[in-house]
Image (cartoon, rainbow, N blue to C red):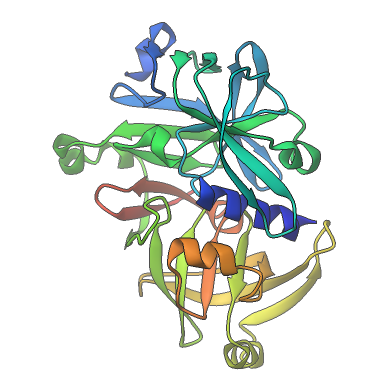
Length: 317
């Protein structure tokens, strides 16, 4: 079941003020962040980070999904959206069909930290009942990459906190977002077709992999048979049985990212190339060997994501 949900998250993600004055802030028409820094309390449900919110008076939680490019995306199964305009139909890997719509009827989006948006236009929506059924019943949608465009962010699963910092020349010099932190590594990354997927160079036991990061999953790995055989022989790819969702999982050891950061991850899903064909095409992944770092990575470190400077700061948790 977890494998099916991960496929849904990956494919749907591809298709589509200062903190002290935030309570007084009200933004109209567009859901872009404003101000110098904004913090949100996080709730972790299984592997997935959420922020509490009300949409048109309905209480729920947005998944913070870096794999989703939208500003925000509303779950039509929870919020009545009269006048929605269908713009895209498709089918996900597990066979379920969906319709994506655009809305000009989002009267209010109010976050738990007080940040409030009114009269939003051009907001995407879809029926996200699979998230309600399999992750949390009050999933009211997503916030994605375009929501924080022009900001870098710090993701802290220990303190359950998500903080956005306005990206500017002064901040690049001061690096105030690193105050009091111990930096483990600074990883330069690239992006391809989709600007919300940071990509890095990875070696595992001397085998080359493409790596990427995504908050909307546990983590996954896929590779050619020859590479899998070699890594198993070296004890670097270890079968770990099945998880609580009855999905196969593996532990991966001796992972080296950009020649700088060495780590291991436990309990990620092995995928075949066929299973991931849709998002491989969307992300322009041509490498046979690929690993995506999700929750199993973020539970080990705090991270700062700087899309403008194409750097990820990996911090001691």
